[in-house]
Image (cartoon, rainbow, N blue to C red; front, side, top):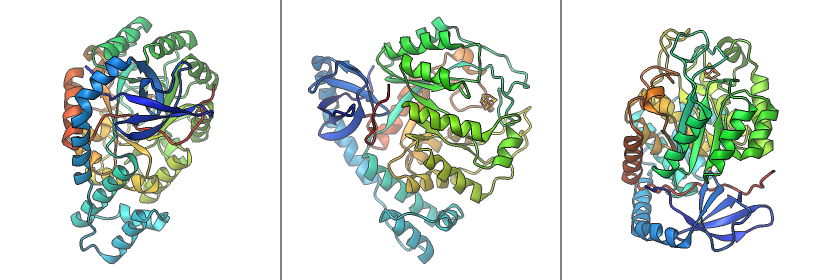
Length: 435
Ligand code: SF4
């Protein structure tokens, strides 16, 4: 099964970049294969060329996609239309600024976060979707995620696998992780896999290098989500072939951070995110929304701090209180509160990639669809074996806990197609590979 569309490499630049053509639509990429040549058909993920495929295979896939690709584009164009209708003057003025690509002030951002009127919210989300379409056309990306260990040395108050909580712990062996990844690539056609765990030093440099280099050799984008590990380890993993890292800072408010992550330092976390960026990693970062004592000003600061880190992908989700954790009694955010954050992020950083997180889906069963129509453009599918998935409960009743990989893929594709989205790569702005 293959659901990512290959493109043709039409240009190679001296800075390590290149251009891939998808049915006439051009996307900048980073070349990460020394033997790729102009004219080759390739797969790119997260803006990185991950694999060449034969011309014969590519043409066969493209012939299946050709009509559908243009059909989907038309549908997305139709669905991303927005009209200002009869909005109150203040809201209209702010949204016009957004549409004219003018920067928003903090006051503007706060005013949008405080909107409650359904008519105004409707236009807010439509405009965010319109901008997503303007910047990315109908391209969406899907990554697989393997949650390979729920051991964690940290004790974050909001987390269901914190070290103090009694849960059944598991670790997948190196061979098992490789086997699951190989199956996800061969059987399901994944081109990017996120390796996620608690902060678990049992996976030392030797084990992680073996996993990363083996997965990279499968021709996929290897995406790490392993928490605060040493800078030197991340450097070694980059050399082994990892190219993306997900590390959220969780909150820009130092007092809240200190309270919820005992013994951890926001400064050290931000420093590591910046170091990963300068090593050459594609960065996904963001925050948790709905933490105790959080104010709308904190949300604005969270969005602006994420932006200042220059992420390739924004990853933020609502707090879903987990039982037997210090935040078990915290109330959940409304879906509109989260959609406003997504829309606002799209306004602040128009060409960003915004992930629909599982936490959001857990908050509301239809969240994936409405988030994709409010500015989001990226999704993950859980490929962790079912026997482990039930124990990676960072919060309760996760939306994907009982969903097989096949069902997860099919529902993701059905959703993307119903919205006119095509699973092409999302491309990157100009950048240079570091080695
Ligand atoms: S949030 Fe991450 S670091 Fe904190 S306890 Fe959970 S898995 Fe560990």
